[in-house]
Image 1 (cartoon, rainbow, N blue to C red):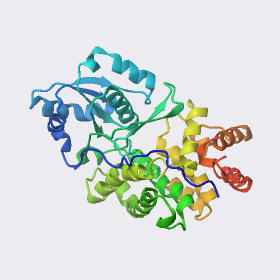
Image 2: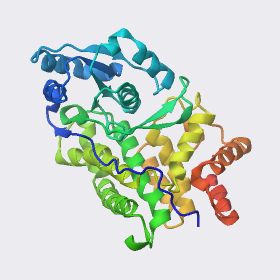
Image 3: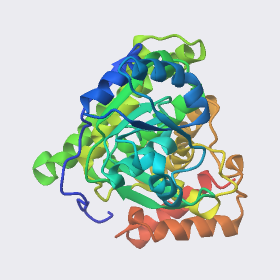
Image 4: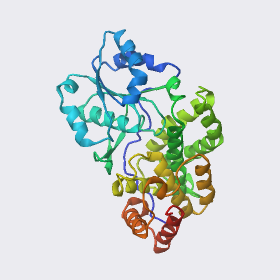
Length: 366
């Protein structure tokens, strides 16, 4: 058994200052900016996201005599690019940062806001990750290689999740979020299955129990939610799943406090981004985490990894290295495995456990 979990973060950062989810909540953005004592927003947004939201944002701000500065962000969250934004006169003149878009935009907006001492308000336009909610920024090179995460000491001030936008997101983004969230149960279960609350950190145990509920909900509602999204239906099923992917997953992450879980799924994702940034550039975070989960589940040994992969294929998701542009050669398999061995995911594993991980790679290396 791998080593006991170590708690990396002293504080429980389990929420944001204010979370609003519902139809038309984007029209409240002016009020939320004012509530935070600001009036000069700097908006960092994706190109598509701004095309969907700018008219509503401008109208809401104008009603309170506010006008925003817009910056279209089309990269991964990159520290160097964020530093350039923060050094600009336009950014310095603003008193709040608003992120509008997907995970990379959310992370860049959080990075710029927190490091400059400004409040942060996030408007996710997809539920592909919980990045709008969580107090950290996953950082990359400009080419898309992973360089680590910046953990922020303050939480996000406000999140606005407008269901009139989220019910029209591409199904691919929804699925990415579902499988990124499902990773929680598999990463936690390996540490906590059969462990009582008396023998575990209370926050980590609460994270595990909440992830059990979330997993049951997501798997039960997934097919119906995909059908609703495909048809642009704004239903309670979509609402519940979006809430689970953004808010609930964010709380689960905060309760775990960055503990050293056996996070094989996420470490395989990070390794793929670091080793093969060009090959995997166009694939989503949750898609690659899901491929890593096939290895995680086979290693855990308490569920059928082949059945897990089969459901992914039925949903149109990639399940192998070759399907995300990485040649499944013996050299690449060894390179990926060696990188994983050096990570916290495999810290303290016995030789037998390491061999189980190696054998599990056969499921994705073709």
